[in-house]
Amino acid sequence: MHLAAADLSALIALCRAEIDRHGEHLGALDSAIGDGDHGANMRRGLEAVFAERDAIAALPLPAALERIGLVLVMNIGGAAGPLYGTLLMELGRALPDGDEADDLAAPLERAIAAVARRGRSGPGDKTLLDVLYPVQAELVRRSPPGDIAACARSAAHSTGPMQARRGRASFLGARSIGHEDPGASSCALLTAAICGYFEEHRPS
Ligand code: ADP
Ligand code: MG
Image 1 (cartoon, rainbow, N blue to C red):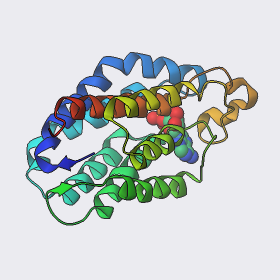
Image 2 (tube, rainbow, N blue to C red):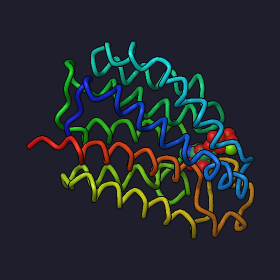
Image 3 (spheres, rainbow, N blue to C red):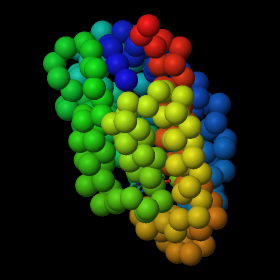
């Protein structure tokens, strides 16, 4: 997937719209196994990034992603804020200088590793990482955006039968089984929105 600074403003708007549309659903998922604030947290974070989108899109790509990460940390709050923030900040730091990035697989691998360190979490813990790992694997395979989006959705769905081992949901023990993880769900929504954009703007 080829990412350019010129894509950022539209991508931010799409992500904000997607989270806005599904905020209630994310809140309901979090009410089942957490404290119900995930939709509101994500909406607050994406609103803040959206408000800054022109200034962000004027930065070089790595600095723009770092800035998005910082705005997310400052505005999402909860457990998800530092995790989404780390993801974007580390992705920015892992990108080469310039306004375009051709290969996101390696930078994303580094960024996901930083999220895992920050959350002391890994595969199967029933978190947003359970979406990020398979999405990164699809990037390595150079799968088309539609396939990556489908993979993200099915990965989020697969967190349902898992027992949470990290975050608030882990306090429920076995009672966390049977509910999709809210962070995995928001991550899949964002991935699908981004993939939808690249499907429409695929270089010919
Ligand atoms: P909080 O749990 O503080 O209310 P949110 O509701 O916004 O924060 O986010 C909850 C989501 O954050 C979970 O669904 C999970 O995906 C993710 N999460 C929580 N703790 C961790 C962790 N230690 N590692 C990875 N992801 C985590
Ligand atoms: Mg919560």
